Image 1 (cartoon, helix red, strand yellow):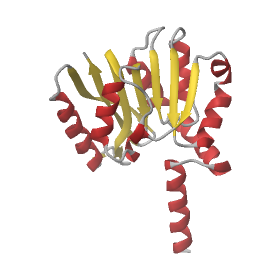
Image 2: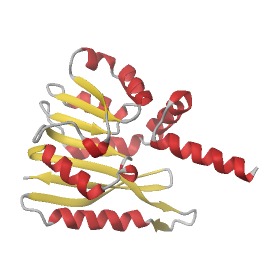
Image 3: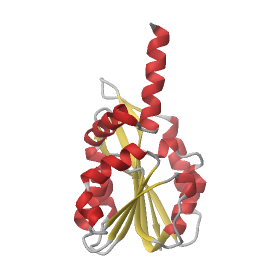
Image 4: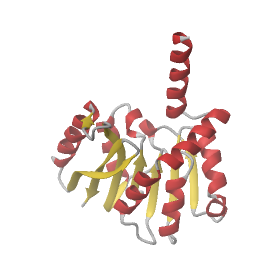
Length: 212
């Protein structure tokens, strides 16, 4: 029984990383609901303008895309995700914008973003940072994609709150702080760690990078 539970847990972990098939679709829809507070917060941090060119990395079931499309009404929104199942789910949820050419959905890997320099005004990602193979290198890649005055908002959880109210920080929090300090050393780049809403028992932060 223990081995069976371990295999099931490993399977669910893989589905969260790369949702696929009916189970992946269900997990994607559950994450869309569970992550609503931090997704809305992330989009608010972008301070979207009507004509912005926006990229969402790891868009999942498409809630962030929907929120972005409601604000960047004269711009263009692009999403990239590794999961074909999530692309199908997000496409169904945002089919009108896709049909009108306002939304483009691509399948691709965060380590090799297929875009030119200064392509986007705003870039954001919610809960994909855990799976980035080289966060520093990927952040540098995204900075190149940003136009001058552009902004990256990268949101993820770095702690959880116990039943007694104590907040327990994970090693990921220190890595996030270190990455912010590293980016701050660059010329014409501003970076800080923003503290966002709690979602269930998890405490969310965002690495916010602005290109001057």
